[in-house]
Length: 353
Ligand SMILES: *Cc1c(COP(=O)(O)O)cnc(C)c1O
Picture 1 (spheres, rainbow, N blue to C red):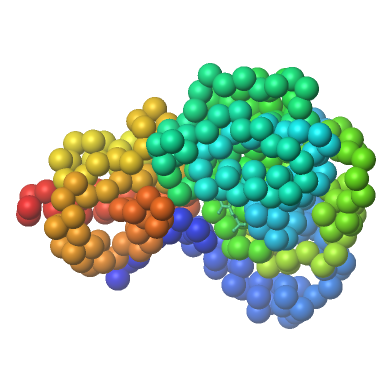
Picture 2: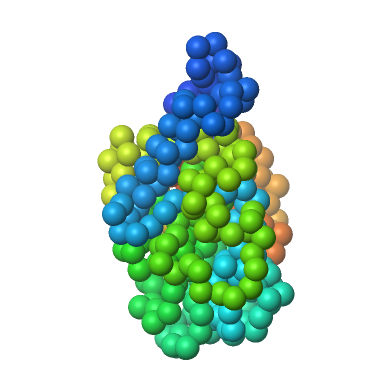
């Protein structure tokens, strides 16, 4: 049976990428596996350099003073690294969900954090707007897409201080002026590759302004000076991410995938809005094109719906425990056809009920 993978993360990857990645595990360089050659050998150094260059190229940040790193420890480690490298006296955070909240908690270990705005009052079903960013703080931090709640920032402030963004679940999914940001980070497993590496894109000039001593593994400058090879990098995750970035480039880059992502989002949200059996979770204006969250109006239909979902080969539709209901994650590699299958199941339920 054909499977339709709506998993929120780790997520669906392009079939051609999985094929090439699995081949490299057996034979990458003259009969040797990618997993058993030196990360200092030319074939792997080329992979790392290519992955870093592709990331900057796709984001339109080449030649603009940015460096791309592939680090370990997930986006969760970035919550801490951002604070260690950038927080001297105070920072402002926009609190739009569980992940922002975790980022705030980590930074609070080091210094005072000011929440510029929060949507916690409504279980994070919207993105706060019209807030002010203090001009004398070290940086402003936001989360572009709230994976759990299904909200997405459609606009970003013109921040008077360095702007840092967790783009884990929508990086490379839509066109933005990425040069507005000074640090962007994203765990690979949402839209780029397997778990195990985190892309960090840094405008180099914002570093080196804090007085604390930073442990080497936590220091962006150390990783930049070693071209993302300070220690043994997660070779498989970096290679697979590189393949996905090549796949995206061959498709026509972010502009091309954005069109597909918009079509998928339109399809699911119009069904959610038209079908009286379902109700969307997030405020319409802030709906995420990556994660669509919705619930059944009548819980009695739960079993019937979930059986139909299963029979259609749909995987990964369960909502996060803090929201309940369902979450259709439609990352870059999910075909429009899969969203069509889900929408058919939803309208079939309406006919049956
Ligand atoms: C999944 C996710 C994280 C956590 O990523 P890890 O790599 O598991 O640490 C952080 N932020 C956002 C927006 C996420 O979706």
